[in-house]
Image (tube, rainbow, N blue to C red; front, side, top):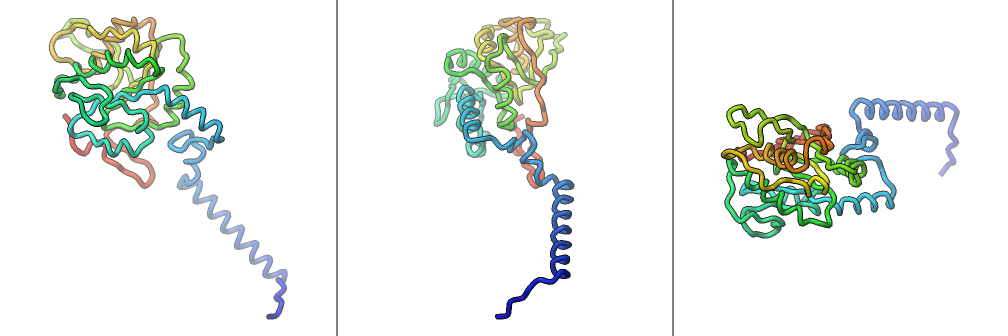
Length: 256
């Protein structure tokens, strides 16, 4: 076969095509964010060395994700996420995978009792330094959680991370009146806060379980002694997950 030598014209055309392709790729990446997943500290996070990843996973071993379940909870879905190794399902009755058992049937109206149940149980989890309470229609990003662990694992005060608000209970002027509490889809707290929770708190009737937890914090730990931290909702998904080519209904069957 004859040896075909490239001419100057062919070299110029090849360089022109290469430049066009590179420009197109950069434009597409900028417009559609193809590379953003690898640079944001989000779902994929920054690329870590193996030693860094090992240290981060070691930190996660100190985490317990408190996960109240019911008949509609899809455990298979959560077992296929990063959460699986850290889940502590809270069940009404003993069953496969149940880590906390309350031994009573719960309904939406009695979730406050279930909250007091797991709050008593976690006081005995001496090998855990941080806790997340997560609803079964919510997701949280792993790198966001690792960042919170790094920042608060040795904090000198009780820490309560969530989207906080105040109760408005003019019709029920009891121990929960005006307490500061977090949104139950996600709240994270440290061992210092778990240890000072007042789990025998008294109040009138059946109450919102999130405000009950906030009341246990206020009356047991004292609001002035607690570090209240606002959550970052960019890394927490509730009811639905939407990102790029994914749109997932996390609450297909409504519990209430």
